Length: 255
Image (cartoon, rainbow, N blue to C red; front, side, top):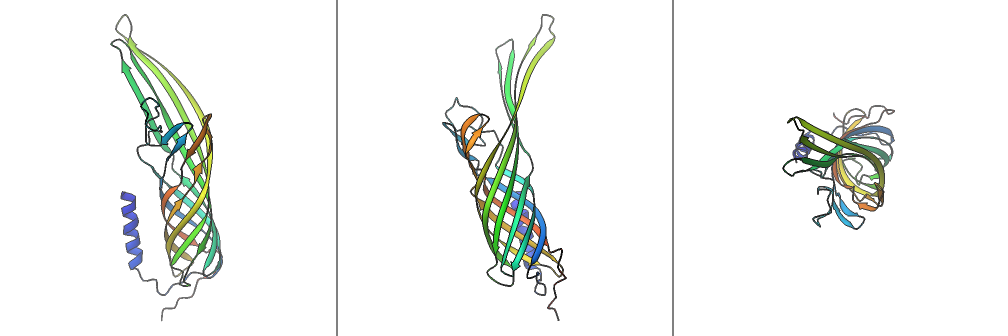
């Protein structure tokens, strides 16, 4: 929630600034990107089990299984390229680079002589390609709406381990550990809808902030288990810049 608070502060600052004398280029190629924060849905089904990504990976309790995430937040960067067709329409392609999400779970038992431990660690890498059409209702190029496709890919490294610990006849501690690492990937597709606000500068740069919702959902086998149908889209906020690299500096209308 701290990141959301920073976003609100940022919007308040740029919203109070005076951009009345600046305008973005009416057309042309641009590149840019920014930082984003995403709350993924993280729920659905896996085979015959309900799935909730923040739950433990256990089928004993009857609760939904999960990967023991502490929260559903992903942070990352999102570079983009695009083309502004005219003052009210543009197309863009963005690539979401999320920071690896790590989680772990362990279970320990002691029978009076021996300690048994088993568990797992998970590294979840989520990437997405967004193909978007953007519409500015007004030619002053401030508020905009957009929609398009979300093509997401997830790579997961799963390490299972188990071990025992005990004391030998001389009272020396002894431990034995075995681990096995497995990797798999799964893809998802969905639709994106969003809205934002753009503030052109006196040069070829434009600052923007946006919010969007993605319906991306997996529908495939995951670690050799069928029917991993889990929502990996969700709500995302982004702050970034666009640079119209091949344009002359827009004219200012300041007296």
